[in-house]
Amino acid sequence: MSTAAGAGAWLDALPYEWQVALRQVRGAGQGSNRFIAFISRVSMLGIALGVAALIVLLSVVNGFQVEVRDRMLGLVPHITLVLRDGVFSNWQEAAQAVQQNPAVVAAAPAVLAEGLLGRGEQLRGVALRGIDPAVEGTVSPVVRALPPALLQQLQAGSMNVVLGQELARALGVKAGDTVTLVRAAGSGSGSTSAPQMTALRVAGTFSAGHFEFDNTLALLHWQDAATLFKLTGVNAINVQLAQALDAPAVARTLQAGLGFGVSVRDWTQVNRTWFESVQLQRRMLALILTLIVAVAAFNLVSTLVMTVTDKQGDIAILRTLGASPRSIMGIFVVQGLLAGLVGTAGGVLLGLAIATNLDVMVPALERALGTTLLSPSVYLIDHLPSMPLASDVVPVALVSLALSLAATLYPSWRASRLQPALALRDE
Image (cartoon, rainbow, N blue to C red; front, side):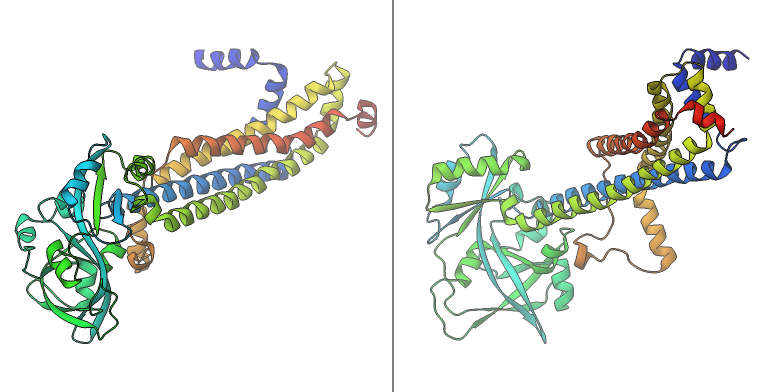
């Protein structure tokens, strides 16, 4: 009794426009036009589904972007220094100069080159990275996670190579097997004679969790890479920062200090096309789903127009009792907003429930369908990540409520223009 009395007291304390609107919403389908009640519920359901879909979409895009970025940064250095002409004759001195910047935590030498790896009838294009096993772990989390025994095999002069897991699978090789490196003769000297071939021993494999790297990258000692490509030193220095997101600003600072002779590239430049395409897809998909929410919200227009038509007699009575046109308009604005609020709240709850459980739902769906929804060769990762953020959920909810408000304006204005005498004459 006390709870009911408290709720009644709270309701009585509201302005009468809110009281009438709440009774309209609560009493929908009870003595009123049931078709109008059905259309109202469909509108709320449409808003809920649209909001939920938008939240799930943005959460998946966020998760996908962060997941791929983190895996990418497992092997892609935050900043790479490359001489525009020649090699670093003393990379230690250059690395020490770079580490004077407080944002830099480590630097390591590298020889970057391209070639073909073959075994039997299989031949694959590869990105070769010559590294110093002793210091590469300071700039590459994936290399840092490799077994020490495997890194010890990458000794200068050993001609051992560590292949990406997918690359090794494509070539059909395992640790201890031999592959053939095919490269242009006199690489680095501009020679155009017949290509040269060198046998390399596979020391082992690595997995970065990123299909592109696992399928194309091969690691060997930088001195072996320099020998193979006839270089007198390293042609790149990889730099690790304390914060990866600071890379563009730090790169600009380093470029100003090192001058034009050194090309300074940060990880966002190396992968600019991928990040820009993801952002474009995010914006376009968000726009499309926002339009779906708008369509559902503007279903409230038809609901309220029918409600105004159905309640003409009641509106006329309120007007004769002294209700102003503004009050009549307020009743229907509140009624539409309440419907939008219910739909939006339901959509937010449903969207968050799905977004936070995608790691369970997607594998279950794949098992039920007997298929793989995400091919790592296409999507770079083999699962559907999700990261719902308040910075996405709050704007979605606000946009949904704003669209609901916009949808109420015309029917509410029409109700406020109703003439009591004309309405009562037909009763």
